[in-house]
Amino acid sequence: MSAIIYILYNADASAMGKMQYAYRKLTAPPNESPCAACDLTHNGLRLTETKEWSNTKSRIGAEVKQLHKDEADRQIVDFVKGQGIKYPLVLGRPSAGEDLRVLMTAQDLAASSKDHESFLRMLARKSAESGVQVDIKS
Image (tube, rainbow, N blue to C red; front, side, top):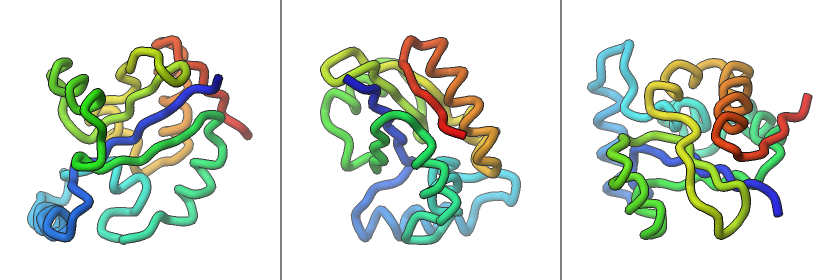
């Protein structure tokens, strides 16, 4: 079985959630983002993934699931609450049915959201440290 990577946004998928995120994004200080995962995959306020993210995602040798907070299943929500970690974040599983592991925190995403190569390097390193096999293609 292959690894599963979960990119969890700090936003809800509903229309109201999108409006709340847009407000937070527009009113945040220039050097802060309410959702670095959104910046990474959608370049902030876009409703569709960027071409750069599509290319980056295709290089990740694992199933990638991108979820808003209100789309995550109970197990993911309970894990995040139990760990006391903040959204956005990246979780991983070595394979379906295995335990979740924290791969990247909100701070990790903030440090790499503007540089996809940096994100891939950090994902590879953090997943290896966590026992989640993720091959990054060249």
